Length: 176
Image (tube, rainbow, N blue to C red; front, side):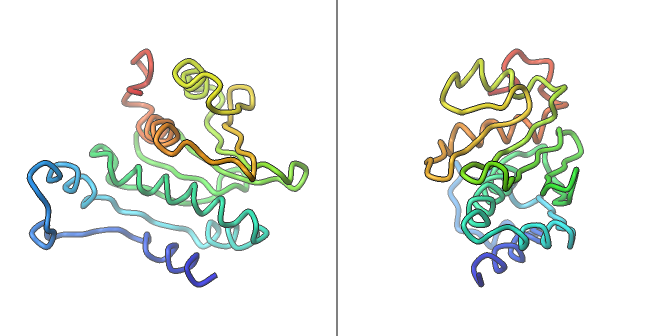
């Protein structure tokens, strides 16, 4: 439980100001500069909702959260990320993105989901690019089974497309 809350506090907010404090090579410089400028705010409702999940699912949702934060840090266009509740679910909001949500429902106890705006082209594009790598719920979610290993690199591409959706929505595959 301590690790969970340490990581919650670790990301609220992220702001590093002196790039010279890092021991990096030239190749990593651009990526690190993007990471330096991310500010994250986390509402108390977001934290409370994460605390309310059963232990067996809380770690799964925390992992999705860490992927969102990691991905956001790697995107130069994302300088601010808000962690809040939308429709009663932990959500991530950026200035030029589409709201990204995650949740677990007791009526489907062996799975959890990452939700995307159903009127966007996000899930439709994920199906086109990744085929049956993921399990989908219509045009609104990627479904994960509790015992499933998540394809991290591919999911991060989905997360990135959502976080910058309004910048890439005119592209055929949303920049994936």
